[in-house]
Length: 170
Image (tube, rainbow, N blue to C red; front, side, top):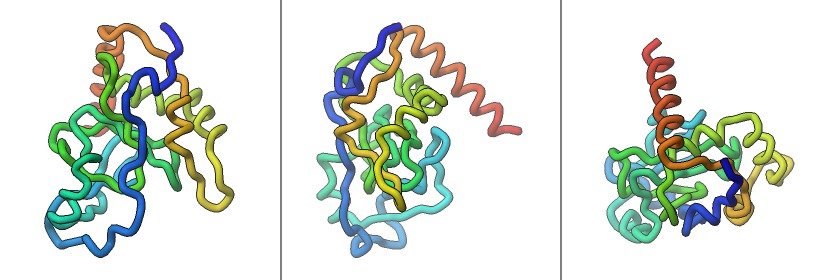
């Protein structure tokens, strides 16, 4: 295993749209991924916001694709998730996006690593803010993770996905 900065792994680590989006909310339209949809390594649909076509198209350069990762940057910072196939081409609000891997990487492996006590402690160290906790995309570029070869990443990621699935069933 080796230690690597996330900026060595991803060509793009940056923010999803940050600003006022409420004028573009509609009853049905394009699902808009927000921080309250990300918890404990998973994307949930407990609350769903939809945006209109015009606003969605304006976000095209920041659309998320299958296998990209997102991380909550304000509030319950550090919670991360992998974009599944059904959310390919999604727009997001106020999340840190990890896109365009520079090498073959298993995102589920990294996702489970973010959930370890070691990573949570490191994220806590770069968190700012007293009332509302916050992390910066620029700090995540310097964040160091433990990486193994791709085959081992696949096995570890798959193992934890199966465990998550079993837990969900019970």
